[in-house]
Length: 136
Image: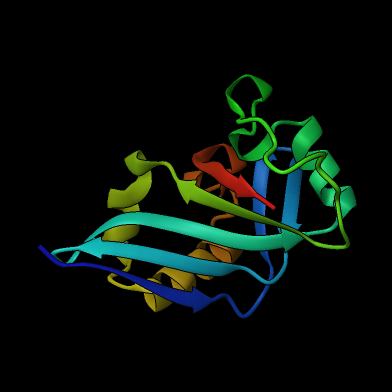
């Protein structure tokens, strides 16, 4: 049983939607794709946002950052610095759609960029399809 995680940078911003009228654009996205025995088992976005963008993410519970399921802050009070890093994982129900269009991190990054331009309301591009795992 072989498990591998490969990374790829998106060479552009990624625009995700939260509703048909509202989007959020994230720059500097790094994509991590984990495969087990040649099958994609996880896809993660790792990106940085400004404190203002994080405030919007926090207030609107984007990336499923719901207060009732958050862990307590470790190591003291949360201090938003110039850049806040968020790591989010794709809803496992959408992994088959990703796997139909990509076999590795580079192809997954290309696919996300393509649908961002051609199908901006694709379910994979919804902030509700991604679950924040870590904010630091």
